[in-house]
Amino acid sequence: MQDIRCGNCSKKLGEGEYIALAMKCPRCGTLNHLRAESSEPERHRVPVIGAAHGPQTTKQPTRQK
Ligand SMILES: [Zn+2]
View 1 (cartoon, rainbow, N blue to C red):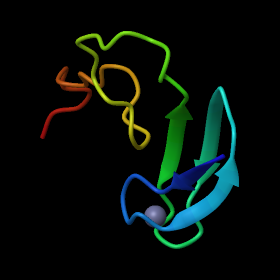
View 2: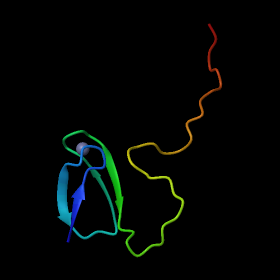
View 3: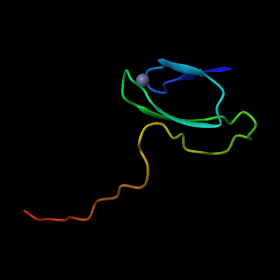
């Protein structure tokens, strides 16, 4: 078994074995996306911590002053 900890505040959320897990931290509210990647080779990957999903390029002006 392994500890499941929050990626933001390191609060222990539980323990067990998992392949993939999404768990919201009750303390700081961070949504942790956890993955068991011990058997996977390390790649150049952006760590997915928090809810920063997708490119948010809202640079187009929707309204003008
Ligand atoms: Zn937390």
